[in-house]
Image (cartoon, rainbow, N blue to C red; front, top):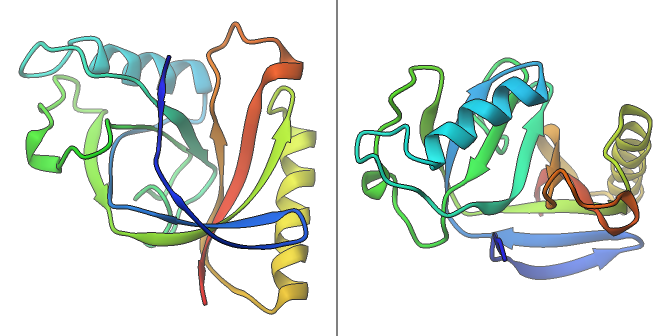
Length: 172
């Protein structure tokens, strides 16, 4: 069973859930293609690192089209990130052997999230992002950065069992 990022639910507004996330350590790649980014990150957690150790997989896998410095991933391009095991610090993580993978730390932050099932295809993701933007606007909540996608399941999980979320950092 894959560990999931711990978070505290801080409120709700319609289908939007507000969460406070702890400091997170991420392994990230810039990649416009999911398979390429996933494969690089998977190689890192399965031993392509300076310690040659395996690192536990933690869900979700986070992807973004464009990220501001305050977003969930620090990058200016399409990116994909694996969350490192909860409680680990940046200094405890081995360095990647592939220069396309980098390790970063995100501070504690509050995120607004909408959950949806099925495959995270463009149309479904776009609809969830629009519902999140509109819901935050109606609730008068200020967002920070860019929207991002979180996928929780391995590739072989049937669509009807998949958990996906779109998220956006907020300031309240």
